[in-house]
Image 1: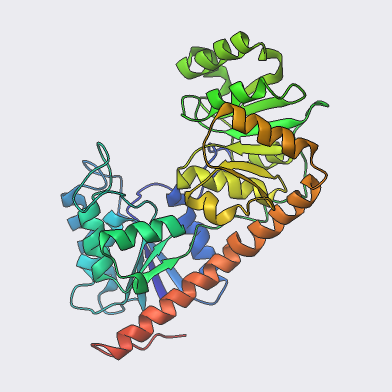
Image 2 (image 1 turned 90 degrees about the horizontal axis):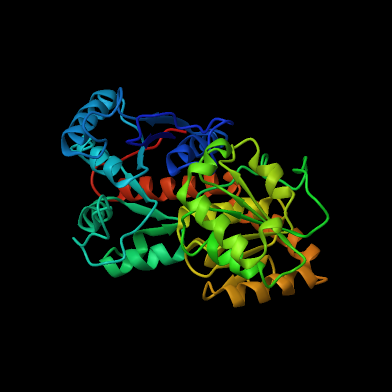
Length: 379
């Protein structure tokens, strides 16, 4: 089967080991391509030629990208086209016009409001997403919540598939070196220093967990922390709470260093409800770290409450502190770590995500053979 993966990102798709963690969604395209290739498919990743000109999502760029794709597909079109973002979807649909190619669309985020409503400057337009979703044969989203949001926008439920991003379980694994640590139980949070709720809530909770230390990973490189307003505000708060000796800030952590840092932690705290940031939770689980995470989104799907960690309905310092104390004292924490590894590997390994994605392609191609021009995928 010949697959065309379409991304509008003009830069490198594979995260380098010295890149900051976490990687963006564009870097997952390469991992998906590798997983599909391991299943025997012919995968070609298509990105715009050269650097973006005037913004990668502007209409002129999309038109140019569509023309570029149409030229590449002339004479030998792919069996399935899979767009990795809504701008890529616009370009792919325009390029495949008249070819009757089965098209699949991934949305990494879904606008919650009605069609045409924006959440802020630069937000994804729900109206465009809805038009794409109605034109393709399958829509892939990462969470059950996102699938429900698409249904509310008017996308038929039958065309929606829940296929999350994968985790590199060869890197994020319990086996391997761990970062140095002391004797205190270690709590780890990976977040921007100004994220709310986030580090400030974790600091206030730490004040009621006297035995533990908190490591906050994120923000600018360590050499630039002193000039960062978010860092200064958190450091001041830690001093006011009397916990400055139990808090450390790593600054920016590279891809290469993150697995070892995760393996050094007893618990991961993630209060973000953003699905991209929630992948940190899954990667920590793959390292054998139980989690305490905000309820909803990817966390609602990934974290089995009481088995691989705990979900918080509200990110309140008092509630977070109680849950941290409960888990640190629980004789079941080691069992939770084992369950977390199993959950991450069974549900989120790239091998499984590749299989689920390929199954979507096969159904999409079969639909193409039933309606319209017969389409016979090559194997």
